[in-house]
Length: 78
Image 1: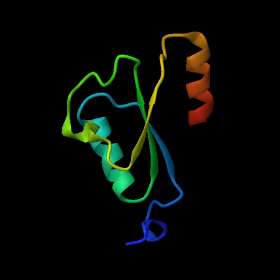
Image 2: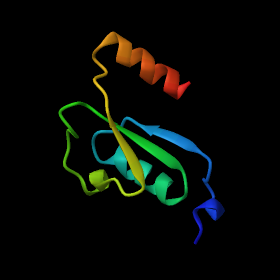
Image 3: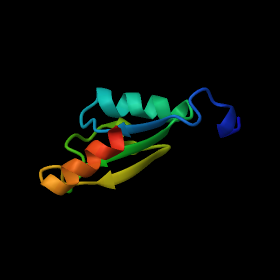
Image 4: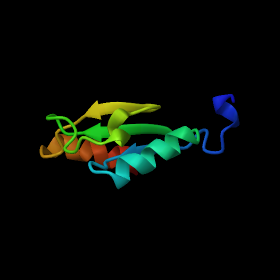
């Protein structure tokens, strides 16, 4: 199946999830055609889950504890 025919093609999602439910849902959204950007802390994922296998997701490591990065993430989600 072509990606452009999937129901969520063109939808952009930022995944801040770190445990099971968030990454699993993001994986489902990506499988349905959404563009998913997964945000990890600089130390990597906090939970080793099969959903963190990141199929069809982009991974970005961001330190959200610093002010500048927090503003960047707020702009991306608005």
